[in-house]
Image 1 (cartoon, helix red, strand yellow):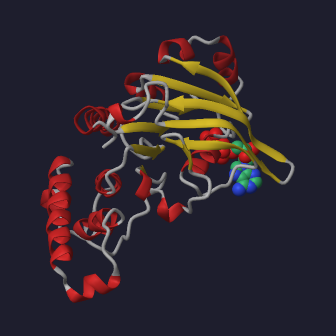
Image 2 (image 1 turned 30 degrees about the vertical axis):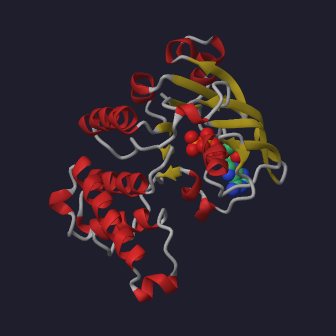
Length: 265
Ligand SMILES: Nc1ncnc2c1ncn2[C@@H]1O[C@H](COP(=O)(O)OP(=O)(O)OP(=O)(O)O)[C@@H](O)[C@H]1O
């Protein structure tokens, strides 16, 4: 967990600084900047093609910006490969659920927890005392998270047989098992019904409140974003259009115009 005391008050947990991304001739992001502070839920919105996924992919290190920087606790993350972002406290979920579908819920969550262990193959195979202690701590962490997300009853079920909404919770559990400081959620409401979206909003808020995890939410479901975000950043055509409280962004004339000109809700 981030200790807010550890950072100077003015240092954001995450800073997106003038980030641009081009694909051939297409400018997907054009000089986008914003800060995220510890404990915030930040909603990233914008009509189709605005650049949300591109930015999300830069944060999770799948894309490399052509200009600009992304700082986590003041240090650039841009030389870090995607499989090493968990080490610095960035966890993520995927739009269409990316679990090991033939493995159990428990094994999927253990894989997330392993991303944070210090063990290596030699000490693992020798079963050194430090490894055994690490395993016990890992098992306790996984059990706690399964309980927290009410997945205990399906812990030994194979993921592919579970309803989509449950699979999404397993993905969240796997991301939480990496003990993130920031959780990046890519359209978590996609494919969920009304009740499930409501429960998801409640869960995201609880995760922030109970576990002190900062959340970045890329989401088309405006009701969800506006009900749980403390801060909203709106993009359009790769540029930042607005940045402020949900109420301020929702009533921003440029945001209204961008949405009225699109097929989004
Ligand atoms: N891999 C890629 N190659 C070429 N162009 C891309 C690529 N990814 C995104 N783009 C383009 O970059 C722009 C931003 O796309 P992006 O997917 O980031 O928008 P978005 O806001 O996530 O849209 P949506 O809400 O529809 O998912 C669009 O013009 C898109 O066509």
